[in-house]
Length: 286
Figure (tube, rainbow, N blue to C red):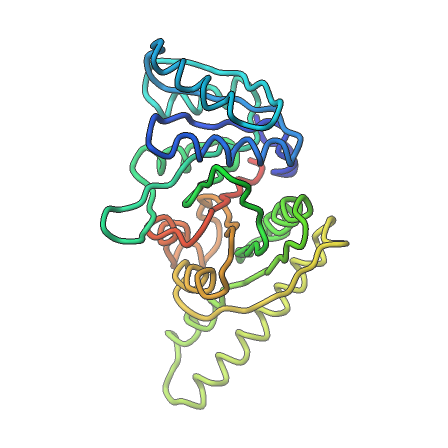
């Protein structure tokens, strides 16, 4: 298995090379991230290796101001299979890829290939919405703590990233889900609705406190907490935009293990349709 007991640190990072107009910006962002974390860098292109492609890639790498000496893999075949197989071969901890912007509207989303990589990836995935060639530090990281026992791992991974940046604030959010379930069972009057809402808010706050107690690396990290009300995925998406978050950290596609997972659609499905900012999808250990 690629993943260890924890999804971090990111020791080996892979960048999927697609010859798009954003290639240079994507590579610069990935290079800065690798340099900051002290990670090994692997580039993989699913397609034929031509002199033109090789020259263009080498020219871009020559302009990157870091001595990273990435390993470059050229492999023909299905893009998803090539990326996944390369991850397994080189024990990759994180995939970095660019998100797509729909024409005529400021909306980022994941196409079918990237979505499949997110689903099948054996490691975490970092999606770049607005990559920049110049330095682009993170100042606000928002983490969506899931309603399961993996919440502490997601928070820890976010804190791990935040520690590598100067003046980076971490916001730990938990979406208030339970009140919608109990309200659907009994909402005979406004008094009951208020009672259920207050009780579920208290429960979510207690769960969040327990999540934070389980984190081993929050010491020295500036963070705050918030409870969000609204439809899963939409609430965290709205808050990310409203708060001006630079990065949103969420859990990867979850296995259906508890009653809330069976009742509500995975939050990530909503987020991938309209990504608010750079998105870190944390894949926990199998």
